[in-house]
Length: 191
Figure 1: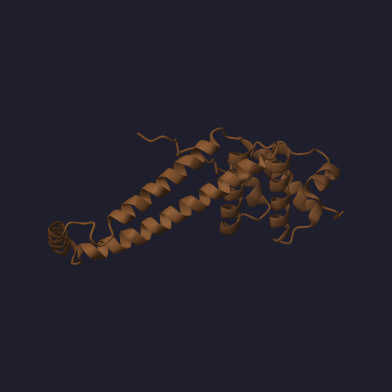
Figure 2 (figure 1 turned 90 degrees about the horizontal axis):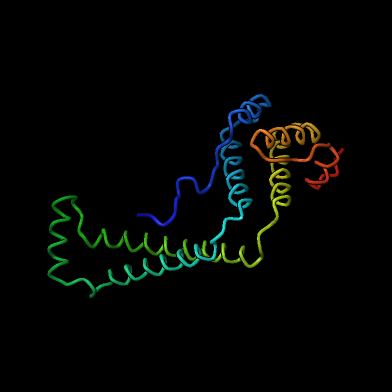
């Protein structure tokens, strides 16, 4: 039984009305969609102020440590020689490679995964120490990033702000009503 429900942990889905608008503006490239899904998912995960992040950091560190224990158990001299010989024979018959080749790949993957979990835990831990950003700041960061991304397609600043506002509204995110408030939220000085 899993400890975490990972199926809905980060909701990256773009609602159909928002997708329709993205396509209407002609900005729905595969790259844009991937970027927006990722950005929207990060916003939703952060805005939730999900409790238990320190516990998640500890779990990630424990898992990284466990991976390194398995890594150490695969070091030369840790596997009984007779058992290794039998494993070599079985593996060679099944796949044409020796058990030791499998162990080397596994050790490389374990090291990589352990390092990645440790770095991720450090990043989460640093975010917890800084404290959660309030939802308005998170929303403004997303709004600003979206306006900039839309501007890259050649759309004017005012139209990009209007498009970003409508897209986020269709994603269920409350955004400022007036052009002036949107400019202020995005830090934009363009008219």
